[in-house]
Length: 434
Image (cartoon, rainbow, N blue to C red; front, side, top):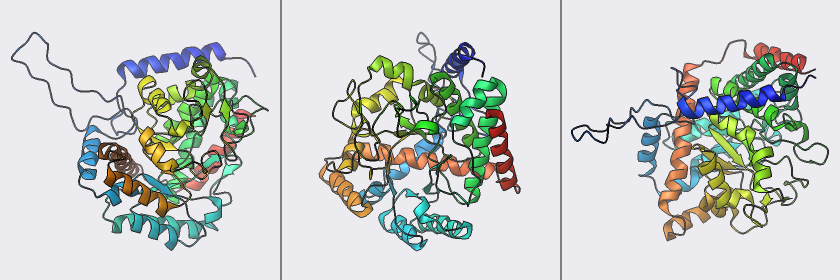
C-alpha cells in the first residue's frame, strides 16, 4: 500500500478548518453546520437590534435550534421519574419483545440496547423493535426511542445472520490507504447501507463507528475494530462513516472517547490504566474524534479508562475533566453516552450512573439494574444531589437528537432493495481494502 500520510494530514486539517470556520448544513438537514446565532448588529449602531435565531438553523450535531428549544421546553415540564428514565438505555435478558417494551413504558427509559442474546431471527427482531417503539408512544412520547445495537462490522456484530455481514472496520482504513478518493466513498456507502438496513429492522441508533487508534498486538480490546494504527487514516475512516450513517437517518456513536486503542487491559474485565501524556493523547487518539465532530457527529461514547494525565483513578466516563476535553477543547455539543455500565471496569463502583451524570454524561448505557439505577437518579433529583438543570440538559439533548432522527428518517425512506444494496456495499468495501 502506498503511503498517503502527507495527503491525509493535509486533507484532515483542511476539513477541520473549513468546517470550523464556515460550515453550513445541507438543505435537507442531514449534514448540519455549526450552531451559531445570527450576526449581531454593529456595536456602534444604537438603533440596531440582534436578529433572532432562525429555528430551522441546524446545530453542529444534527437537530435544529428549534428542535433543541422544543426539547428543552418539553423536559422542563417532566417529573423526576420521566427525567431519570430519559437518560437510561436499558439492558434486558431473553428474547421476549414484551420485556424491553415494559421497561421502556414503566420506567420511561430513553430506550434499550439489543445484543446477540436478545435476538433469534428477523421476525423476532422486528417484533421487538416495534414493541419498544409502541411502548414509548404509549408513554406519551411523539419522538422515537433509542433502539441501539453494536453493529460495527467484523466480530462485533450482534445481528449476525439477520443483517448483512460487513468486514471489520480496519477494512475502511486499508481502502483509504489504497486510494484516498474511492476509500472514503466505499467507507461512507458501507455505513449508509448499514444504517438503512438497521432502520429497516426498526433500529434508530448504531453504536459505531470505532474512532479508536489501535497500537496493534498490544491492544487486546480494539484491534481490527479500529480503522488504523495511523491517526490520520483512522480519522478519515471515522468521519466518512459518520457521514454515511447520517445520510441514512440513523444516529451514529463515535467511540470510545478519548481513545481506547492504547489500553493494554480489556475494560470489559477491569479498569485499564493509560499513562499517555495529554499531548500524546492529542496527537495519537484525538484526531478521529476531532474530524468526526467536524463532520457533525451526533453522539460520542465515553470510555472506561483511567487516564492518569487527565483524571487519575477515575474512569473517563465519570471524570468531569474528560467531558471538558470533549466539549471545551473539541467543541462537541451533542449527546455524550457512557460505555456499558455493566462492564468490569466500572461495575463495582458505587452509583456509577450518578457519577457519570454529574460528570457530564447525557445517556447511561446498559446499567446493571435498570430499576435500581432509575430510582437512584430519581432520589438524587428530588434531594438536589443531582441538580435539575443538569438532568434537564442531558434529557433534552437526547430528545432533540431523537427528533432529528425521526425527521431525517422520514425524508429518507429505506430503499426497497436495502438488503441487495448492503450486500453490494459490503463487497465493495472488501474489494477496495484487499
